[in-house]
Image (cartoon, rainbow, N blue to C red; front, side):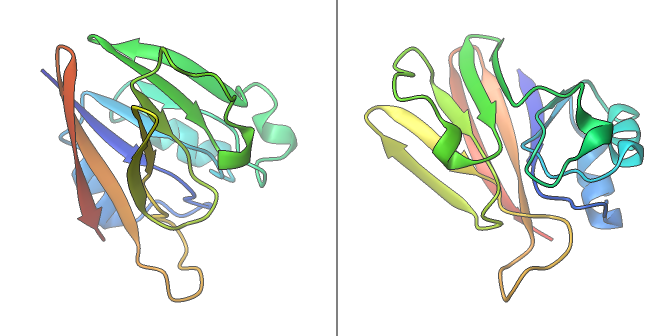
Length: 148
C-alpha cells in the first residue's frame, strides 16, 4: 500500500497545513506552477517527488518535464499541468492528474479517472484551498479531498 499526497499550483507558497499532510506521504505528486526551486527542494525533503512544470514555471524549471507517465504499484498515472495538454489517446492509463485551473475536480471520462487537486498555494478568486491524499493498493486506488 502506498500513500501519495497530490498537490498543484503552490505558486511559491508551501503552507504549514500542507507540510503536515506531506509528513504521512510515501510519494508526492505536484502538477505544476511551483514557482521556485526552493519549493521543489522542500517537497523532496518529505518524500520522493513526481513533478511537472506549469505555465508559471520559467527558466529555473527547464529541467522539469511538461508531462510524466509513471506506474505506482499497478496504477498507470499521467501527470500534466494544463488539461488542454492531455493527449487524446490515453486508454492505457488509469488516472490523469492535472492542475492549472485551481479548481478541485474529480470525474471519470471514457473509463479514465480525471483528477485536479485544486490549489494549495495562494488563494485565487473565491476558490477553496485544496490538495488530496491517494491510497494505492496494487491495482486499486482511492482519492480523498483535503481542504486546507
